[in-house]
Length: 223
Image (cartoon, rainbow, N blue to C red; front, side, top):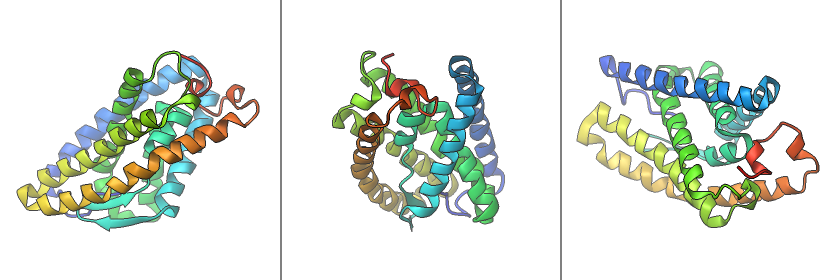
């Protein structure tokens, strides 16, 4: 997942540092809250799982350049539902950093933009989940409609941020490239809810998973 090099250059790239700092501050707040609720060991374990999963998604699942960025099966809503917001944020941010350090160093100057693009929609997803999922509903009992709404919101947020960076860097000249990128992402929106439901259904069959500390508490418990 990356904004193509050269889309935002010069002094304009400073904005990405500010947005990334804001996302990092919110992630830290969420992390501290999660440590208070579930403990540091559970948070760290889920963060490692999230990093390994996100890195695998970035590298192993189909991905291809379209317009101003790449289309990826990020599975952000899956990470959120299974691990929780803070571990998912840790996983996405670290996986993106590892990718840049070891496999795609040309992406490092865009790290602030890319991490903003992945994390801000994740935090918006947390807010949306609280609105559309009743307090008495476990995540393993979500309907397809709810999974679709969450996936669409996350992927829509990613597309919106990519569009913002493209227009910010290149102005209206980026219109065609942004449109093609957004259209290509529609296939991700169609597939990801099915992945969410398959993973949640599989989790139901894993004995004692709810007491392991390896998944978000809300997967098996009501709010």
